[in-house]
Image (tube, rainbow, N blue to C red; front, side):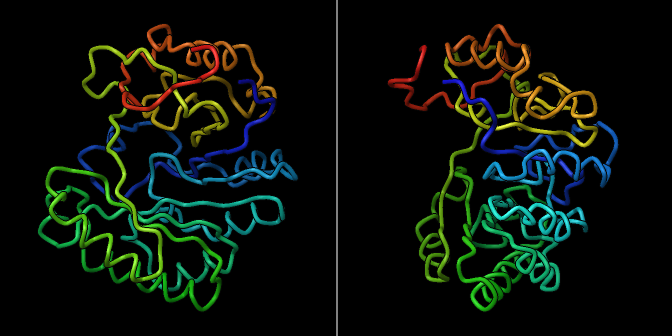
Length: 282
């Protein structure tokens, strides 16, 4: 399937994260700058105007590590066709920051909480205070109910051996709070111990583009080592990068399940259990 312009975009406004999740390679990210320049953020966003795009202003980072986030949301939402989604560990989300993000026009908020008790949460390795996380989320839900009832809120647990005995209670508790509660699978990031790839297509790259803080676009949001650079927004437009020879070549290869021909994807076992029945070209 060929898409002439991406439908979704992720912009890494900062590389910083307050979490220490054992399954995330964020701690291995060494690239500079720590923050994307304000003008570069606006330059990217301006090229999406009127496209009806889904914006996710984060990558491997915690979005609220960037105190500019409410302003970034507000700038994106100057386009009435744009949607803004965030994923957060909720550790930094004080009520005043929650209110600012909600008033800026946030559309979807996804919280990651991998436990239903402080002891299991500590084992999950996020390195954040569980009670503060839960309080911040409940405060956010209360503000959502008062200020923007249509704002969609998810609370997600990554499926781990240590939390399976808590999943039923977890889902019941958060659903009672009036949000979407989910248990999601754990995916391995490429180049985190794999010795080969899964010879299957990849659904991640069909409709979405990803920008790192320096303005480079990469093939996948899991590319913590910048192994799959497809272009640079400082040199070419978003549309030129998306329709460029390298991105088209790699998307075609991935549509056929030829991950082994792309350095980044040659050590990726993501979506090994995904049902690719009817996938074009596979």
